[in-house]
Image: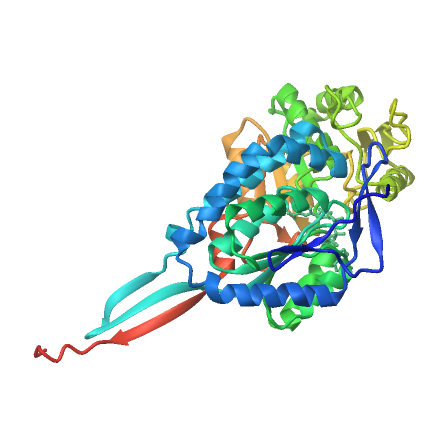
Length: 490
Ligand code: NAD
């Protein structure tokens, strides 16, 4: 029997796609085909948008206190099904079971925050802006919105947007990554049990054709995107050209500075988790370690040892600390970039290429890799590798480190390890990145803070999560009112 063909979810019903092309969804560790995913045609996006537009008429009139009830149910369902969902993430995406559970926790936190919409969505007012005239600002939903997600956090990233979109009274089209579509299939099956009216959430599987149909559809008012920088830029410009609001999170190249006064043992442990966690396929993964002064040798020795010891294998197996990368093309790309670093003069201090992982020989694995003496002006210092590769560079002062960081194209995250409050303040103040970590390796904002990428890591102004998500998913209306009290003399 062939693998299950995934369906789309439109207007409260699962529908087989009319797609002529289906892609295999493959477990990157075992190469097992888990399902096939349709590359849906534009017509199916239109069906989803029409359903969402019809649902919006009723949903926006539903009181906010009622709109959040399905989200409370969803929180419970996500918790009850956490183990199953985590297994699915590991199977389709490769990360370890603990990492999959961790991303689901972050998803649930966003549901919890969005349950505060009755207060988060409030406007404000002033009496007597002129004699007998009052003015108020109210927030109203936009209409049909869309969420386009990447492969690396199949369970979490849609939740940076979805709960806020619907709690604010919008309806939504979700397009998961075609490489990892299974997790959101399961989440939408749970959403079906929450009492959410049909058409409020729709799921359309596919690739660029679906994205373009969303970007060009006149009824789609807002687009939330997460993925690589070239696509983020493209989505942002096409959405803007079509008069939509857009928030587009892109790629990253995250530098971490290690000062001589840092606790090297703690720094090394945290850095290894940052660089090699999720096999380096995290937009907040540390990819450059900039040692300053005497931090160089002790950190280099310690991180090399930890990298070599990391247990690599299938994420469902006990004791595994790092899984495969997403597919064979990605493995080949990462290995090519390691070679490029060596060609540019770096030393491959720990070489994770072509590993032989027992029982998973056909899987797409790269072991932790460390490039030493990377040329700060070379291509490898600027290119997002998106794999378990840490580049080491050395400088003499924190000022040089900050200058190097600020010369980079990306601004997703920058971190500093130190015991000095003054150095920490300087770094926080001067580093050009939207998410800053001080003695933190993955400065991931909690659900009630914005995910604040800068520069080529973000196109737009309002980020995902928290208050900014509420602003993104609402439009402000200002009302100026005069009600003459004819019974009184003023
Ligand atoms: P990607 O850009 O290849 O794909 C993202 C989404 O865009 C997918 O749904 C895909 O179907 C669609 N897409 C791909 N090519 C397209 C095209 N030409 N036109 C229109 N749509 C297209 O990204 P990915 O490989 O799935 O994810 C990894 C990237 O995402 C990395 O660069 C990573 O840094 C970035 N990322 C960023 C953040 C962040 O918060 N800034 C978070 C996670 C991942």
